[in-house]
Image 1 (cartoon, helix red, strand yellow):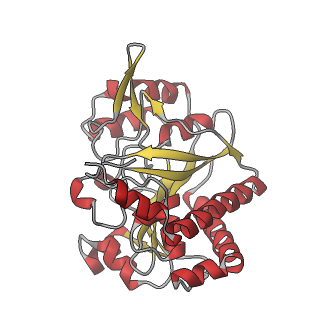
Image 2 (spheres, helix red, strand yellow; image 1 turned 120 degrees about the vertical axis):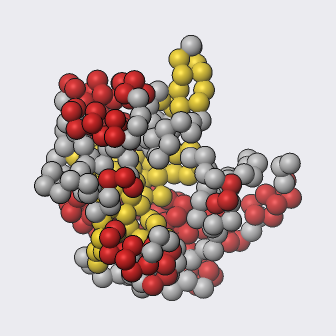
Image 3 (cartoon, one colour; image 1 turned 180 degrees about the vertical axis):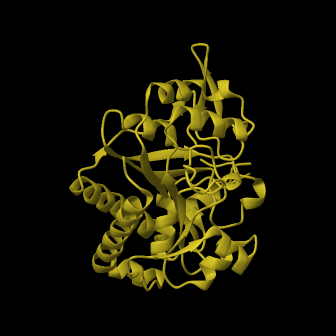
Length: 308
Protein backbone atom coordinates (compact mmCIF):
# COMPACT_ATOMS: atom_id res chain seq x y z
CA UNK A 1 0.00 0.00 0.00
CA UNK A 2 1.24 3.47 -0.84
CA UNK A 3 1.86 5.61 2.25
CA UNK A 4 0.75 9.12 1.20
CA UNK A 5 0.99 10.54 4.72
CA UNK A 6 4.62 9.45 5.03
CA UNK A 7 5.46 11.16 1.72
CA UNK A 8 3.70 14.37 2.74
CA UNK A 9 5.58 14.48 6.04
CA UNK A 10 8.90 13.95 4.28
CA UNK A 11 8.20 16.39 1.44
CA UNK A 12 7.34 19.15 3.90
CA UNK A 13 10.27 18.52 6.22
CA UNK A 14 12.95 21.15 6.63
CA UNK A 15 15.62 18.44 6.50
CA UNK A 16 14.63 17.32 3.02
CA UNK A 17 14.34 20.89 1.72
CA UNK A 18 17.85 21.74 2.90
CA UNK A 19 19.33 18.45 1.68
CA UNK A 20 17.85 18.92 -1.80
CA UNK A 21 19.13 22.51 -1.91
CA UNK A 22 22.65 21.27 -1.11
CA UNK A 23 22.25 18.45 -3.62
CA UNK A 24 21.41 20.94 -6.35
CA UNK A 25 24.62 22.81 -5.56
CA UNK A 26 26.64 19.56 -5.57
CA UNK A 27 25.44 18.91 -9.12
CA UNK A 28 26.19 22.46 -10.23
CA UNK A 29 29.67 22.48 -8.67
CA UNK A 30 30.51 19.07 -10.17
CA UNK A 31 29.33 20.14 -13.62
CA UNK A 32 31.34 23.39 -13.50
CA UNK A 33 34.46 21.63 -12.21
CA UNK A 34 34.41 18.97 -14.91
CA UNK A 35 33.71 21.57 -17.58
CA UNK A 36 36.79 23.47 -16.47
CA UNK A 37 38.82 20.27 -16.97
CA UNK A 38 37.71 19.86 -20.58
CA UNK A 39 34.98 17.28 -20.00
CA UNK A 40 31.87 17.14 -22.19
CA UNK A 41 28.54 16.27 -20.60
CA UNK A 42 26.53 13.63 -22.45
CA UNK A 43 22.86 12.85 -21.96
CA UNK A 44 22.02 9.75 -19.90
CA UNK A 45 20.81 6.48 -21.37
CA UNK A 46 17.69 5.23 -19.59
CA UNK A 47 16.89 2.10 -21.64
CA UNK A 48 19.21 -0.08 -23.71
CA UNK A 49 19.52 -3.67 -24.94
CA UNK A 50 22.74 -3.91 -22.86
CA UNK A 51 23.51 -2.71 -19.36
CA UNK A 52 25.79 -3.46 -16.44
CA UNK A 53 25.39 -7.11 -15.26
CA UNK A 54 26.20 -6.17 -11.63
CA UNK A 55 26.79 -9.68 -10.29
CA UNK A 56 23.67 -11.20 -11.87
CA UNK A 57 22.85 -10.27 -15.46
CA UNK A 58 19.49 -12.06 -15.15
CA UNK A 59 18.07 -9.48 -12.70
CA UNK A 60 16.59 -7.02 -15.16
CA UNK A 61 14.07 -4.23 -15.35
CA UNK A 62 12.91 -5.20 -18.82
CA UNK A 63 10.46 -3.57 -21.20
CA UNK A 64 9.41 -4.46 -24.73
CA UNK A 65 9.18 -1.77 -27.38
CA UNK A 66 8.55 -2.25 -31.13
CA UNK A 67 9.24 -5.93 -30.65
CA UNK A 68 12.68 -5.26 -29.13
CA UNK A 69 13.67 -5.95 -25.54
CA UNK A 70 15.25 -3.12 -23.57
CA UNK A 71 16.56 -3.04 -20.02
CA UNK A 72 16.46 -0.17 -17.55
CA UNK A 73 19.97 1.18 -17.06
CA UNK A 74 21.85 -0.26 -14.08
CA UNK A 75 24.86 1.83 -15.06
CA UNK A 76 26.17 3.46 -18.24
CA UNK A 77 29.48 1.58 -18.21
CA UNK A 78 29.24 0.27 -21.79
CA UNK A 79 27.87 3.54 -23.16
CA UNK A 80 30.70 5.41 -21.46
CA UNK A 81 33.28 3.24 -23.19
CA UNK A 82 31.57 3.50 -26.55
CA UNK A 83 31.11 7.27 -26.23
CA UNK A 84 34.90 7.68 -26.04
CA UNK A 85 35.03 6.78 -29.74
CA UNK A 86 33.61 10.28 -30.23
CA UNK A 87 34.70 12.36 -27.22
CA UNK A 88 37.83 11.74 -25.08
CA UNK A 89 36.55 12.98 -21.69
CA UNK A 90 32.88 12.59 -20.81
CA UNK A 91 30.52 12.72 -17.85
CA UNK A 92 26.83 12.20 -17.34
CA UNK A 93 24.33 12.44 -14.48
CA UNK A 94 22.89 9.00 -15.11
CA UNK A 95 19.70 7.59 -13.52
CA UNK A 96 20.27 3.98 -12.43
CA UNK A 97 17.71 1.32 -11.49
CA UNK A 98 18.99 -1.60 -9.43
CA UNK A 99 16.61 -4.12 -7.87
CA UNK A 100 18.21 -4.51 -4.45
CA UNK A 101 17.37 -7.35 -2.01
CA UNK A 102 14.52 -6.45 0.36
CA UNK A 103 16.78 -6.98 3.38
CA UNK A 104 18.69 -3.83 2.36
CA UNK A 105 15.58 -1.75 2.98
CA UNK A 106 16.83 -0.62 6.40
CA UNK A 107 20.54 -0.34 5.59
CA UNK A 108 20.29 3.45 5.25
CA UNK A 109 22.55 3.15 2.16
CA UNK A 110 20.43 1.61 -0.60
CA UNK A 111 17.78 2.84 -3.01
CA UNK A 112 16.50 1.01 -6.09
CA UNK A 113 16.59 4.23 -8.14
CA UNK A 114 19.45 6.70 -7.85
CA UNK A 115 21.61 9.07 -9.88
CA UNK A 116 25.27 8.47 -10.55
CA UNK A 117 27.80 11.01 -11.77
CA UNK A 118 29.49 8.84 -14.39
CA UNK A 119 32.94 9.85 -15.63
CA UNK A 120 35.18 8.21 -18.23
CA UNK A 121 38.52 9.28 -19.72
CA UNK A 122 40.10 7.89 -22.89
CA UNK A 123 43.58 6.34 -22.40
CA UNK A 124 43.64 7.23 -18.69
CA UNK A 125 45.12 5.15 -15.89
CA UNK A 126 43.42 4.39 -12.59
CA UNK A 127 45.64 6.78 -10.64
CA UNK A 128 44.72 9.66 -12.97
CA UNK A 129 40.99 9.31 -12.35
CA UNK A 130 41.57 8.79 -8.63
CA UNK A 131 43.40 12.12 -8.52
CA UNK A 132 40.59 13.73 -10.55
CA UNK A 133 38.02 12.41 -8.09
CA UNK A 134 39.94 13.74 -5.10
CA UNK A 135 40.14 17.19 -6.70
CA UNK A 136 36.43 17.11 -7.51
CA UNK A 137 35.39 16.14 -3.99
CA UNK A 138 37.68 18.67 -2.32
CA UNK A 139 36.27 21.38 -4.60
CA UNK A 140 32.69 20.42 -3.69
CA UNK A 141 33.41 20.05 0.04
CA UNK A 142 35.12 23.45 0.31
CA UNK A 143 32.38 25.30 -1.57
CA UNK A 144 29.55 23.68 0.39
CA UNK A 145 31.29 24.28 3.71
CA UNK A 146 31.87 27.92 2.82
CA UNK A 147 28.54 28.79 1.23
CA UNK A 148 26.08 26.52 3.09
CA UNK A 149 27.36 26.85 6.64
CA UNK A 150 23.87 27.62 7.98
CA UNK A 151 22.48 24.43 6.46
CA UNK A 152 25.37 22.31 7.74
CA UNK A 153 24.84 23.82 11.18
CA UNK A 154 21.13 22.90 10.94
CA UNK A 155 22.16 19.28 10.32
CA UNK A 156 24.73 19.43 13.12
CA UNK A 157 27.36 18.55 10.54
CA UNK A 158 31.03 19.42 10.90
CA UNK A 159 32.21 18.71 7.35
CA UNK A 160 35.93 17.97 7.33
CA UNK A 161 38.10 18.79 4.34
CA UNK A 162 40.25 15.67 3.85
CA UNK A 163 43.95 15.68 3.08
CA UNK A 164 45.16 14.61 -0.35
CA UNK A 165 46.20 12.23 -1.68
CA UNK A 166 43.73 9.93 0.06
CA UNK A 167 45.23 6.86 1.68
CA UNK A 168 44.97 3.46 -0.05
CA UNK A 169 44.32 -0.03 1.25
CA UNK A 170 44.18 -3.22 -0.81
CA UNK A 171 41.20 -5.53 -0.75
CA UNK A 172 43.37 -8.27 0.80
CA UNK A 173 44.54 -5.92 3.55
CA UNK A 174 40.92 -4.90 4.28
CA UNK A 175 39.75 -8.51 4.45
CA UNK A 176 42.66 -9.43 6.72
CA UNK A 177 41.95 -6.53 9.08
CA UNK A 178 38.15 -6.44 9.08
CA UNK A 179 36.79 -9.73 7.69
CA UNK A 180 34.06 -10.17 5.10
CA UNK A 181 32.05 -7.20 6.43
CA UNK A 182 35.05 -4.98 5.68
CA UNK A 183 33.22 -2.04 4.07
CA UNK A 184 31.28 -0.77 7.08
CA UNK A 185 33.94 -1.77 9.60
CA UNK A 186 36.64 0.03 7.60
CA UNK A 187 34.37 3.04 7.08
CA UNK A 188 33.65 3.26 10.81
CA UNK A 189 37.36 3.04 11.62
CA UNK A 190 38.62 5.92 9.46
CA UNK A 191 38.36 9.69 9.78
CA UNK A 192 39.00 10.57 6.11
CA UNK A 193 38.06 8.93 2.79
CA UNK A 194 40.21 5.98 1.76
CA UNK A 195 40.75 4.14 -1.52
CA UNK A 196 40.10 0.40 -1.54
CA UNK A 197 42.04 -1.09 -4.47
CA UNK A 198 43.00 -4.31 -6.27
CA UNK A 199 39.92 -6.49 -5.94
CA UNK A 200 40.09 -10.19 -6.87
CA UNK A 201 38.66 -11.00 -10.28
CA UNK A 202 35.74 -12.99 -8.82
CA UNK A 203 34.50 -9.98 -6.85
CA UNK A 204 33.86 -7.65 -9.78
CA UNK A 205 32.37 -7.47 -13.24
CA UNK A 206 33.95 -8.57 -16.50
CA UNK A 207 34.70 -5.03 -17.73
CA UNK A 208 37.16 -4.18 -14.91
CA UNK A 209 40.70 -4.59 -16.27
CA UNK A 210 42.82 -7.44 -15.00
CA UNK A 211 46.47 -6.68 -14.30
CA UNK A 212 48.45 -8.11 -17.25
CA UNK A 213 51.29 -9.09 -14.90
CA UNK A 214 49.16 -10.06 -11.90
CA UNK A 215 46.51 -12.59 -12.98
CA UNK A 216 43.40 -12.74 -10.84
CA UNK A 217 43.54 -9.12 -9.64
CA UNK A 218 41.96 -6.01 -11.09
CA UNK A 219 43.13 -2.44 -11.68
CA UNK A 220 40.09 -0.99 -9.95
CA UNK A 221 39.01 0.86 -6.83
CA UNK A 222 36.23 1.85 -4.48
CA UNK A 223 36.24 5.03 -2.44
CA UNK A 224 35.06 4.56 1.15
CA UNK A 225 33.63 7.47 3.12
CA UNK A 226 34.62 7.76 6.80
CA UNK A 227 32.32 7.83 9.86
CA UNK A 228 30.43 4.70 8.82
CA UNK A 229 28.93 6.19 5.63
CA UNK A 230 30.31 3.35 3.51
CA UNK A 231 31.01 3.17 -0.21
CA UNK A 232 31.11 6.40 -2.21
CA UNK A 233 32.02 5.17 -5.68
CA UNK A 234 33.37 2.33 -7.78
CA UNK A 235 35.62 2.51 -10.81
CA UNK A 236 38.90 1.58 -12.40
CA UNK A 237 40.52 0.78 -15.70
CA UNK A 238 38.47 -1.07 -18.33
CA UNK A 239 39.06 -4.10 -20.47
CA UNK A 240 39.00 -2.89 -24.07
CA UNK A 241 40.44 -5.73 -26.17
CA UNK A 242 37.92 -8.09 -27.75
CA UNK A 243 39.62 -11.38 -26.80
CA UNK A 244 40.09 -10.34 -23.17
CA UNK A 245 36.49 -9.13 -22.84
CA UNK A 246 35.19 -12.36 -24.43
CA UNK A 247 37.26 -14.46 -22.04
CA UNK A 248 36.08 -12.49 -19.02
CA UNK A 249 32.41 -12.86 -20.01
CA UNK A 250 32.90 -16.60 -20.36
CA UNK A 251 34.65 -16.79 -16.97
CA UNK A 252 31.55 -15.18 -15.44
CA UNK A 253 29.43 -17.95 -16.94
CA UNK A 254 27.46 -15.52 -19.10
CA UNK A 255 26.39 -16.54 -22.59
CA UNK A 256 28.17 -14.39 -25.16
CA UNK A 257 24.97 -13.45 -27.01
CA UNK A 258 23.81 -11.49 -23.94
CA UNK A 259 26.54 -8.93 -24.76
CA UNK A 260 26.77 -9.46 -28.50
CA UNK A 261 26.22 -5.76 -29.30
CA UNK A 262 28.98 -4.71 -26.90
CA UNK A 263 31.30 -7.39 -28.29
CA UNK A 264 30.71 -6.09 -31.82
CA UNK A 265 31.99 -2.67 -30.75
CA UNK A 266 34.95 -4.28 -28.97
CA UNK A 267 35.84 -6.27 -32.09
CA UNK A 268 35.89 -3.06 -34.16
CA UNK A 269 38.04 -1.35 -31.52
CA UNK A 270 37.54 0.38 -28.18
CA UNK A 271 39.98 2.77 -26.49
CA UNK A 272 41.69 1.91 -23.23
CA UNK A 273 40.07 4.04 -20.52
CA UNK A 274 39.43 4.56 -16.85
CA UNK A 275 36.57 6.11 -14.96
CA UNK A 276 34.16 5.87 -12.07
CA UNK A 277 30.59 6.46 -10.98
CA UNK A 278 29.81 8.36 -7.79
CA UNK A 279 26.34 8.25 -6.25
CA UNK A 280 24.82 11.71 -5.91
CA UNK A 281 22.44 10.67 -3.14
CA UNK A 282 25.25 9.06 -1.13
CA UNK A 283 27.39 12.15 -1.60
CA UNK A 284 24.49 14.30 -0.39
CA UNK A 285 24.00 11.99 2.59
CA UNK A 286 27.68 12.21 3.53
CA UNK A 287 27.93 15.99 3.18
CA UNK A 288 24.76 16.57 5.23
CA UNK A 289 25.50 13.78 7.72
CA UNK A 290 22.12 12.14 7.11
CA UNK A 291 21.29 8.85 8.79
CA UNK A 292 19.22 7.45 5.93
CA UNK A 293 19.64 7.75 2.17
CA UNK A 294 15.87 8.20 1.95
CA UNK A 295 16.37 11.78 3.20
CA UNK A 296 18.79 12.62 0.39
CA UNK A 297 16.37 13.07 -2.52
CA UNK A 298 12.79 13.65 -3.52
CA UNK A 299 10.77 10.51 -4.35
CA UNK A 300 13.26 8.06 -2.87
CA UNK A 301 12.47 4.39 -3.50
CA UNK A 302 13.53 1.87 -0.89
CA UNK A 303 13.89 -1.85 -1.66
CA UNK A 304 10.57 -3.62 -1.16
CA UNK A 305 8.57 -0.41 -0.57
CA UNK A 306 6.14 1.11 -3.09
CA UNK A 307 7.56 4.52 -3.99
CA UNK A 308 6.25 7.50 -5.92
